[in-house]
Image (cartoon, rainbow, N blue to C red):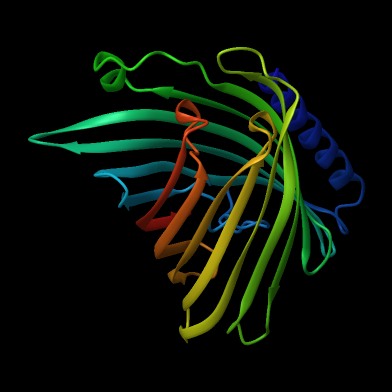
Length: 279
């Protein structure tokens, strides 16, 4: 069960880090406290990243909203080697605008525990375990939509590359990896499938201190759908503080398999305007 694995991992890291810190506190620094700085940033164009957001979709008259974030709570540091544990959670909703009313279509839950390892100046390794449960809302069910189960437990591993020049005028983010869905239920049991993912962000223009123009992309392939793809391209403006907390205003173009589990394997091809808060 992912809950037991998460608890065991947390206990192990706490006990292990406390032990080594006591043995050689001059070389190893262990901090168990909330932190703003993230080793691995939010993946910019990932349309299911942990963040606060609101998007106006232009294929139909609806909106996508998310509530969530990534919250580091444990650091283990020795020289330039850092291990960071983070808890992450998000809820994604689709809100349909109707005459004199609104309709909530779906509620998608995501919860993750990340172990991010700083390998050197530019490379990080992300190990994670998580759960996602994606359902129709009460509004959709009462309107006659049939019930469909969609829930999965997974482990993931990603390699991340980051580069920022000394003047902070240009930066790059590249990542690639996979999620292994070891427990996956929809209309039946489709466990032991993988999701492949890669993406990037490039920030070529600095407007002034802390303000940038950028473009980004995210690509996913789902084994349970014969590796059908979902792509999301994003271009926009961002402003960020010294801790990496970022606000973005961007235009996205999404094509491929719908990210909402209930609607798969339906495809979408649309633009959306979004406000994103990577906290």
